[in-house]
Image (cartoon, rainbow, N blue to C red; front, side):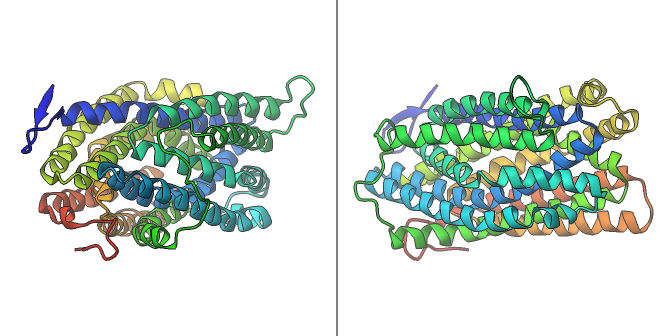
Length: 457
């Protein structure tokens, strides 16, 4: 299907473009999620404490990644806007500057992860043996933060230009190698040592590093549509624009991940079984969630490109169509997951108590999928336009007043852990309602992240 805009230009429909950009991103995210899922599965062969340790390690790793994701939001908004306006040189400089900033941030975040991993793992209130296992996972995975940051920024920049296939290719290679190396080092296949939980992290880190090196070499040789800059320098003007847009997104991601850490600590009050069940449940429901995340990335890219090309009406339409597609996909997948909840939980671990708790968690989080679809699609549109402040506000309100305070109250009242799981519904209800109001207001259409002094409302 094709549409004609007010200038008479013929182009593909919004739905077709959303899907064209979304499906490779969805597969990329599914592959990334599969790594976490299989890490948990590998750890399950080492015992419940190993599952809790890997869950903790992943949560700390996601905190580091989430801060970098805030910078990737700014990169998407800036590069896609320049690319839509056919300002290729500016897009390339923005991409290069974002990469340098990401390396700086990743280097700084690696310091505590590598120097005090046991103290970080101790925040979760687990028993001593599980804490030590988690600390080893955190250390070995943190050793490769610079490679992860590089891969993320290159992938983000290419997606912002519409090239979603190249990042998918490299992620597919990384996923395969990650799981293979992690399993081999965890159980000591062949001449390799048996490293247990630490081996899962070390194997994954080595795999990611090798793929990232290949990614950078191909980019540096000019194999992609977005080229490296002719002069390797740091553009302070581009950096200021990126930081200005990124700060609210980084803050949002920081708030989310710190809140998740706090929520994990609250769940830990109910014991290792409840904690492990929450980790397993998160790894399972991540599959429908990353589908919505894929639509969010596609929407951010298209909205940025369309606003850069001077088509605000088409940008608005794109957001609504992306939301409808995300709702259909996420509701369908979550319904299937709820139907097979016990089978999935049983596949992951052989512990009756953990299985029962995991099933209950899956049922609850599946009810939140429509609200999460609103979050991903519409927040993606806002961020693609450069409106990163309002999603931060919505996230803060949902996390604090919809999740942490009610969960803490549940603990104080000695309520079942199922009540703690259920407060997540209030979190997503508050957040999705606020984002829906903001999107319908159309105020975000007046923001331009490529101007030196963008109008923010």
